[in-house]
Image (cartoon, rainbow, N blue to C red; front, top):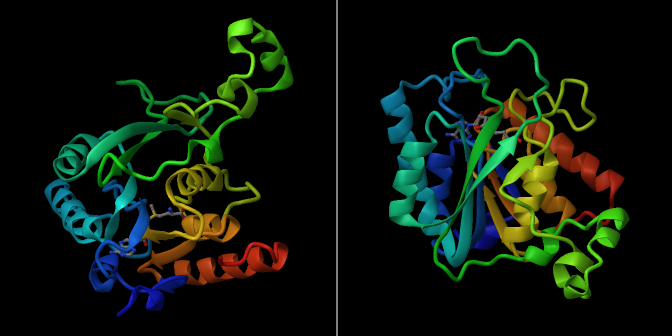
Length: 262
Ligand SMILES: C[S@@+](CC[C@H](N)C(=O)[O-])C[C@H]1O[C@@H](n2cnc3c(N)ncnc32)[C@H](O)[C@@H]1O
């Protein structure tokens, strides 16, 4: 099928069955937030694999997905420190590693682990097909507050782009996880904050480009695409989560009529 038959569509099927039909070299960005291999309940057994089955499965969907990227394309993969070493070693054999991003979930200090340090982060791998990958830093610069800007008053700093327009986000992203009562929260156990996915979309997909999300969950990538004028192709195996995504799309389009597909 031509790429036009896929764009701005949510498919209720396994990504491993659906992605092979997408034309090769047609996708600008893959944002993949797969099951982490930690036994979560997604209403199916997708996260109940043994360690070796999980790693084999991770490589099998990556093998299917990577050829769909354009030469300027890139991939973000959410994972955990428990599996990132193996997954990153594999990805480094297929792509160029750009960053390891730490998502600090800003988990409040409570009891925590007693036999090791409490784990409060997710690991995100940022990989590109080639060194000529698309990256729009200006779209994600973080402006300085007036006080800090004023403090950087030495003449060597005056007129510097980083001072005027903002600085490059660092590779530790401190964004609170979504609490049960958070206004963004959908009925999904591992929904990611929109702020994180928006940054990926704006930095790594050109306007009107195409983002593939193989494991859409509650539709955070779809929402980011709608809000920022990018096309999406999304797969989600659980029909109940697909219903959540459809409602989310409807709400965004009602609340912000300008948030239409490009
Ligand atoms: C970590 S969650 C994604 C959460 C999402 N990023 C969000 O912000 O809501 C992983 C999702 O992948 C789905 N899933 C598992 N195996 C799948 C497969 N083979 N194809 C498509 N979706 C799958 C699960 O049902 C689950 O909703």
